[in-house]
Image (tube, rainbow, N blue to C red; front, side, top):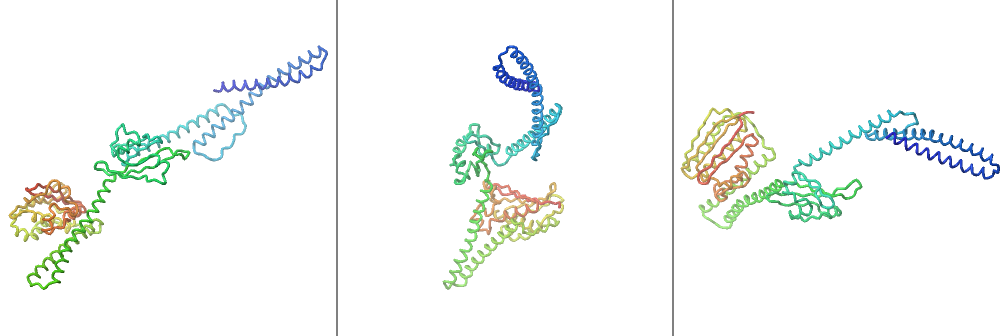
Length: 464
């Protein structure tokens, strides 16, 4: 590169020398045009040739050296200034003073600048890969389109959520297949006047689609990014909330209607003592049912907001189960059930909220008594496995259909609604039991078969 530059400098100096010779020639012609003596013309020509040669050689030598130093100084200044800009030094870079810098200094500055540029490019490439990795493994789907609607980027989540194939490489193809009424040009050019948010359902999934236009360095439209969010759980929770409000309203309306109806009937007519007693018993029964429902709702609310005080202590689970059985002995005797209570191992003390666990056991045992026909069999086992004590309650009652097993812990869900109300159930017992066990680090599992009975396993931790 240096040799090529020197050749160019020599050519420039030769051109300059030629210009000077041409200038000499102009003055030479003007002088000889006025001479008549041939000897004078010859003498003047000799002087001109010698002078022109000396000037030409001087211009070539001196000019090439001056130009070489000027260009060399400029190159060193450019390379050093570039190095400062690469390292992020944005202070004003002073011009180099004219000095006799060596070739080694120039090459050293050039190598430093090259190294800085390489390091900067490595950092840029590293950041680019980090962003690509983040986009690739995001749980939200990302699709990027250019102005022609072609897919320029997509991550794994987008392919999974939208069930994309290799043929789905265009904006129109993808969203027309999903039956989404969205226009690429409107998003890009009418961003402030059109809605870019859509909600769609694909099979059993609910998705929220957000379209955002992006611009290039010149602030001109460059394309659109689509963000796909899976909102299935949010939709399900919202539906459950709506169902819960409707169920509460219905459960409260039924006893209130009965109370108002019987009370108005008593007020309107003069009935005998037996009829009044009958009506008052109905009113009292419905009032108790409504009170129990409100109590259960308040209990669930306290567990949901973590306002329920949990007093964990160590206690014997076998003794607790026996006391629960004694409390329900009247109901057991009414239906002539045969109840067996067996402790299968040396169960250590459990560590939990005793009153909460008692409530769970009473709820499960009372359900077995209610939904088992007269003279049924109920077996209660208390045992220990790993770090958990367990209570297993097995009955030969009516059982639960398989399609209902996945929903029995939902609030107000009943397998047989008419029979549950008749027996005094609120539909909240299992929901409360699950909340209590969750807060005590335990669990509950239910297996059942219609006509053969139900098996419930309650696990309670034995360690703090």
